[in-house]
Image (cartoon, rainbow, N blue to C red):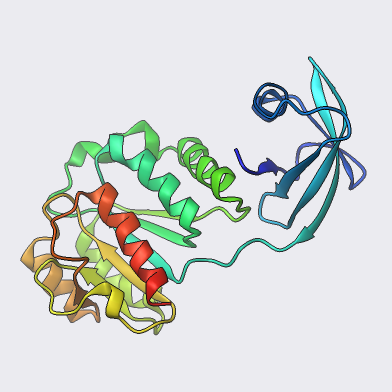
Length: 239
């Protein structure tokens, strides 16, 4: 945990003192081994970052004096449309998306997505938040990616994709594309990543008919949980 994330509904005294009694307090005591007077890196969820001085610490909790003056880091230039991966991959991908600072993640259906994936407990709001916060704490971010769920591919592409793109380029990952994602023009964009095995030809054709353009991630075939960080890293190269 490289950032202690605070919430507006924590136990605040005024706008400077906050008392923590949950896993964050445990982390400060057991992992950081902080003492009274130590300075910690903190951030307010959806707000600024800064420093906090430990005012008191005991088995019951930790009291911090907080000063928030630094803005959160910039968002990644890509928003991501992702065919819902297997549940065991989803948690890792959510952390990755948060670590890269993606603003919006759209989880969609695809021909190669097993229907049972949509029943995963990891799709519950509190589970999504838990995984995203872990990535934010690691990367020192206070802005939580917004996760959107769309269980029907065709209505999403036909009715939502052009609205989501809002004039931005939309790149759909396709191993046979002539253009590398890392060579696409800089600036905000949408990147669509398929399931294991990729999008089927009909899905690529439909997305392209709605304005998407094909781009590849490299010569190798990648698993989904490798393709997502690869695409986001390539987006930074072309920024």
